[in-house]
Image (cartoon, rainbow, N blue to C red):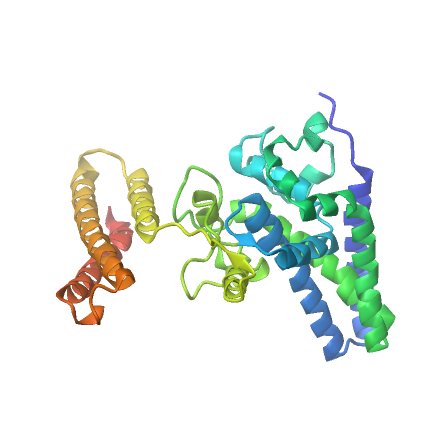
Length: 374
């Protein structure tokens, strides 16, 4: 079978930029050294291009998890060109196909089932998509966005302007043009590329399937550190229209924090979130299925399976009672039916139900720790 034609532009961009970054940056660091200001500038540029992808290309345009003011959309459009990961329109089209056909070889543009190399970078080195490469039928909504189409039309001009102009400007300010081109230009570009590519590759290989085993996506807090919160990928593939990836307060998700903070100034709005009760139902159901898949339905495990099912049913009862009472309390709070809702019997009932539910949930999620002798 004939292989798809090589995309030489991509091969040269990825290989030359990587080789230059891997040689020139260490050489300059050893020979001359970088100043603190130059390092900070490089980190800020890395964050700008990376967050333009995660908050803009991904969560705003690909999944429409929130709405953003034109100022923010323009900010993302420039940063996306700086990141050199194709136009908004094309990136979002590929990503929507990825979610629609996840793990289906030949339909998922960067299917993890085709291996690490393919999903990380190999899918861009050959013309695997053929005639479908410029089929934008799945992003017709984005074609109504003037900023998206402006960036798509002028993408190459914006790429050269940002990738040369921003390091040049920073070099003029700092007085060291070469250092800025190496850090804010070259190294920033390579790291921005591969941090994003890790989501397509490592985030489908390394980590926990907390919410679903129907796809290869994994939750990995180490990857979240490199990808501005995108590492909680099993959650994302299970609840793709949620503007958050890290839903706990302690989970590292600066993309979520930026979107939320921008809403306080009216720059973002209509932030979409998945109801807590739905998330928890999916989570415990996945845990149940995960344990059951490790046990065979024979006499040896029949007692454990029966106990597991019983604990699951009790947990669901506690969950339903807690979330139903919490909903009633939130209605009272929102409608201001009473002066101080915290003094109502319902408030104390919710607190009690919450404690009972959390204890049951914790015991159930730790259930597999008792299986070592099974």
